[in-house]
Length: 80
Image (tube, rainbow, N blue to C red):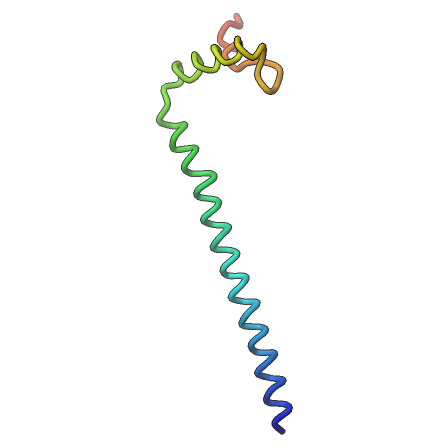
């Protein structure tokens, strides 16, 4: 009889441990979502777009181009 009790307690402890670890990892993922998504977006939303493009233009002139091969500020010079 005692053997069954230990097996049930062991299995129950394993299930509770896995559930707690899953909840902790979900909470960590939420914190990382907020910190790596919300805060940079909030900072970018506070920037003046013209100043940001001017700064990028200066950076592109120093580097030759952006990481994608074309600077976003070059779109301002396009005529339609």
